[in-house]
Every structure is written in structure tokens, then in C-alpha cells.
Image 1 (cartoon, rainbow, N blue to C red):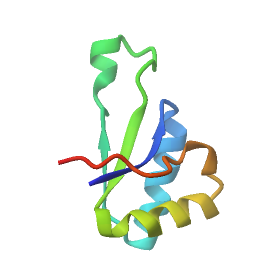
Image 2 (cartoon, one colour; image 1 turned 90 degrees about the vertical axis):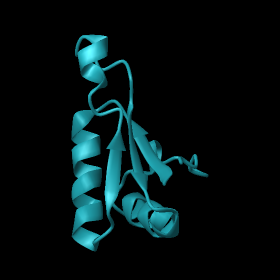
Image 3 (cartoon, rainbow, N blue to C red; image 1 turned 120 degrees about the vertical axis):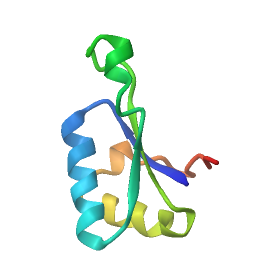
Image 4 (cartoon, one colour; image 1 turned 120 degrees about the horizontal axis):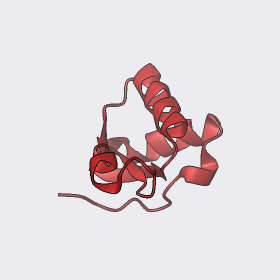
Length: 79
């Protein structure tokens, strides 16, 4: 999996999920439940990850949706 977007704004994450869902790209939201640890203050960003073969397309459609500021350029590979 590759990280394509990172934000601690739930609205941004939700919008990005909707964009990916609309174009048929499966995704995983890492660190979704960190609010339990952090006390719901939003200090830790959530990471949106996609399969490596979908990463370039995901970045393109997310960028076209106006989410350029939250995109991760290279995408950190995750095992």
C-alpha cells in the first residue's frame, strides 16, 4: 500500500474517500482510531493509502478534486 494523502481534518479524509470510491479505487485509512489515544484533539493526521498500482491514478483524481495540498508526493510504501 502507498500513502497518497494525509490530513487531520475529518472532512478532507471523508471527501477523499468519496472521490476514490466514485472512481472505483479501494483505500485504507490508517490511524483512524488515534483519537482514542490523543483524546480527540486531532493532533495525529490520518493517512489514506491505496494499492501501489492505483497510487498514480489516485493522486491524479484527488488532485483534480482540489486536494493537492494534502497529497503525499512519493507515497510511503507500507507492508
